[in-house]
Amino acid sequence: MNMHHIPRIVIAGTHSGCGKTTISRGLMQAFRKKGLIVQPFKVGPDFIDPSHHTAITGRISRNLDPFMMGEEGVIRTFLKASEGADIAVIEGVMGMYDGIDGSDAASTAHVMRIIRAPAILVVDATGMSRSAHAVIKGFCSFEPELDIRGVIFNRVGSQRHRAMIGEDLPLPASGFIPRDTGLSVESRHLGLKMAFEVSDSIPPLDLVGESCDIEAILGAARSASPFPGEDVSDECPEERVRIGIAQDSAFCFYYQDNLDALRTAGAALVPFSPCADPLPEADAYYLGGGYPELHAQALSSSPCRVMLKAAADRGVPVYGECGGLLYLTESVFVEGHEYPMTGILPANARMTGRIQALGYSEGVFTSGPHLAVPGDSLRGHEFHYSTLDSSADARFSVQLTRGKGIEGGKDGLYAHETIGVYTHSYFTRRFAAAMVDAAFRYRKS
Image (cartoon, rainbow, N blue to C red; front, side, top):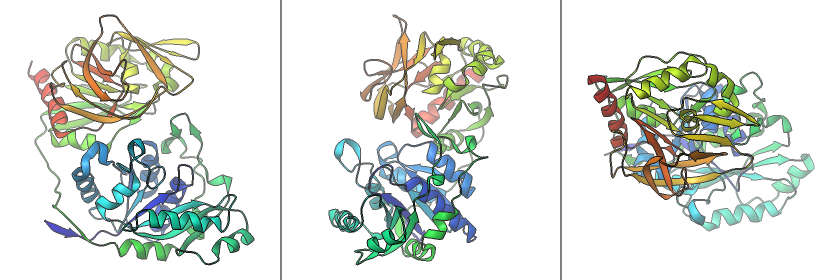
């Protein structure tokens, strides 16, 4: 057990929509401009914010989620990803104390305790001045042992507004950011657009760095106390199998830890685009979430669709999550049009105008193909605007104890060696090993 000295700062917020994402990105950019190596993180199960972090810092942003990963998993990921970085910037989730079912489990505050990190609190100053002091005092006194070092006031209306807020502050002001609609990123029903979708129109973030006390925030990060943890070394196992990873604008939601877990279990990962590429030769395929409904025409006309069906019929293991699940069905109905999909799983999908599931999910594998080991746990997150109409004889490999799943708490629709789940799962080492073993079984067959 060693003591780790990692400069780190959490960007926490009073509530969702206060500006955490914009400010986190702006601070990451400001630190980069100072020549620092910045390792980004996001509290919670979000896929979209990390894509923006990665684009700014040049280092893959990681999720820190105690529900999905466990506290030891949070520490392991934090330590491994922070190697070689000058500073870690952790964007919080929702309000600082908002966790599961009204608790603070898996909240920003929970992660702060796990990695012993100080925080800067983001306060939306719209429509208030001195009342902001009461908000700050409430956040500081609610859990006094947490280390809130300063406050960034967002959406400040004028110099007079700033002066009114700045009188007799209970915490140091780390920044006053003027109201500027140009800082926002275009969004859609699942949140902001992914970084690669707005790369040509990224709003200027210089205003954040210019409006914040960068040296003070850096000093707070560098003063973070050391914390104990085992050294985390990269494992370089022999590559036993090839796993195709669908990666394009239709399938872009992946936890980097999942991909690392597959590599550690012995897989070489082969990226491909179901929208544009023929199916590459591989021993298994992993289809993450994303936006297949926005690319339904391309997916239906791509040669990959028929090739993946043929591979699944031969017994090649296939695992699809959310958007990947939709691609594995017979068809997707989008805005009055029905598009043929792979037809591997006996169901039809329909996009709806409202959210169908949102929140954490948890369950166990009960049956199914070889990669579904009975008794293995599944934890993750649901967030989708679609429904599935499964055939009467549909079979399910997952029984959820938390979450909605495909129907009635059941998830993991399967056929042959193919499984499709609505859950964006965080892979356990056992599951990653099971996927590689299933791929190896096919390779040897």
